Structures are given as structure tokens and as C-alpha cells.
Image: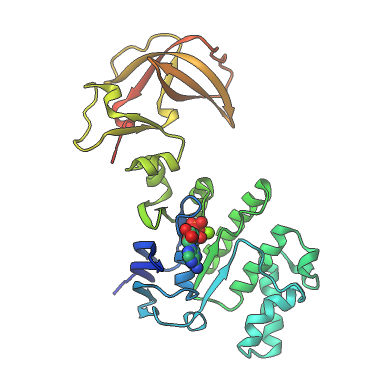
Length: 339
Ligand code: ADP
Ligand code: MG
């Protein structure tokens, strides 16, 4: 019978009278990478610490590989963890840091040497074994921390914002490296980040957190294309969020939905009128501003006092000018109702 590798069932965590986690449930498939995404302070780290056994839960159950580990010590859970702050032992070399967990487990010396060397190769630190943490860059320190967490072959790897102190360029390459190692070795991983782009590129599934609760979950594509709440639409992508009444009766919105979301690339902009045969919504507006965003230009458009963001590919086409009147077309299927 197939069952989720990790089951988190209705976890509550209180600090005194303050309820931090308010009933969190999630399931994680073996070998997958799941991201906990959310703004700072929404209790992502609290949940990870509960999973690692560094905090006790107030209520709920944690099941790992069909075994209830809720009352287990961190050691008994066999979970590897990498934190945002570099947490290497400063007085030990990289090699010694990585060997630490194996030495504690009394693995024979020869095997320790082999496994440490193999793991350092995997994370690209083969030539840095004898260095001390202070002699490494931030990115290298995090690779060493990753090697140290992986070498003991944990059942689960928890990564708490491991890349957030690393600059943008290196961060991208470490994202794909972590993902590659995770996939190759089939390590069930929970990755925490506040960065939606990072969550998009790394995850099999994203759980979006909002103050101690899960707001929405799905694959990156589902989360990007179908946010279901105002919070999700404002956190993921660069959605236009409009009052449903903006379209008056031109689109049908399910009852209970007071807002709608529209991706900027779904707002089609033209200096000449569209022929109204597509069955969408047609609007007129005035360009207020334009900002290049990678390979698109994002326009801010005033539509009768409401600001809409629209995007056009940055190709040879002449830029639209501020003050220019434009025509807009939005397909009905690109107008997403929000709860
Ligand atoms: P995130 O990782 O999403 O930024 P955290 O899990 O660190 O968020 O949660 C931060 C919240 O948890 C804060 O509101 C903080 O006050 C509370 N918190 C964390 N640890 C404790 C503690 N030991 N005692 C009281 N409150 C705590
Ligand atoms: Mg945190």
C-alpha cells in the first residue's frame, strides 16, 4: 500500500498563550522536495523545529515512514537540518565538520574518510577539505553544511532558508545544485523560503503559509496560474488584484468572491483597437509608467482611475509612451476569482 512518507497531522504549537501554529496538516511523498513559502514571521521555522524535534508540539502528530515520531528525540528521528546561519563548528576543518555525525555514530574510520570525500565531491568542495569555515565564502559554508547534513544519510532533509544570506548569482546556481543532489539521491526534503521565485524553481510542491496556517498548496505551476485567495495572489506572481465590481457585470464571478486576480502578461496592450470577437473584456486606458523587467516591459496603465499592470515582450517593438492612450484586452479565462 502506498502512503505519504511524511504526514503532518493537525499540528498546533503554542508559546504560553500565543498560538504560533494553528492546525497545520501536510503530506509529503517519498523523494520529493516540498517548499514552505511565506513571509517572515509566519511560523515556517517553528514548523521545521517541531519536525526536527527541537520543539515539542502542543497538539497533533508527526508520522515519518509510517512511524509516529511525535515523541521522539531529534536523534531518534534521523533528520538532517541546514539553517540560514552558517552553523559549522568554527574550530574544525570542513572535513572534520562533515565527519562529525559519522564519528558520533561510531562508523569505522576508513568508511568515514571515504564517505566524507565522496560527499565533498558531490557538493563541489573536494579541494577545500582542510580549510576552516572562516576561510570559506558563504556559499561554500552552506555547501559544507549541506554535506554535513547529508553524509549521515538522513530520512529527511530540512533546509531553513539556507540560501537567503547568499548573493543573487551564486544563489541561483546553488538552487539548481541542491535540487540536482536532492533528486539524484532521492532525498525527501522540506525547504523553507520567503522567496517565491526560489520556491517556483525548486519545488515539486509548494505550501504557502499565512500566520501559522496553510493558505494554499499545489505544484509551482498550479500556484502560479491559479491562486485562490487574495493573500496567495498578492504573494505569488505580480498579479493585478481588483475589486470584482471593477468589471461590473461584464464577467461572471462566483458568489462570495469579492476580488479577482489577473496576471500582467494576460493584460494585452495595443495602440490600435482590438476587434471585439474574442469574448473577453475590452478596456481603454492611458500609459502612466514603464519599467523593463528582464525580457518584458511592464506598463502601469490608468483605467478610469484604477491602475492595471500589463506586460509586453521586450522585442523590436517600439515602446509605448507615458500619456499614450491604449486599448486593453483580457480573456475571460485569465480573470481569476479570489476568496
Ligand atoms: P518564520 O520562520 O516564518 O520567519 P518563525 O517560525 O521564526 O517564522 O516564527 C516566528 C514567530 O514565532 C514569532 O511570532 C515569534 O514570536 C514566535 N516564536 C518563535 N519561537 C518562540 C519562543 N521560543 N517563544 C515565543 N515565541 C516564539
Ligand atoms: Mg524562519
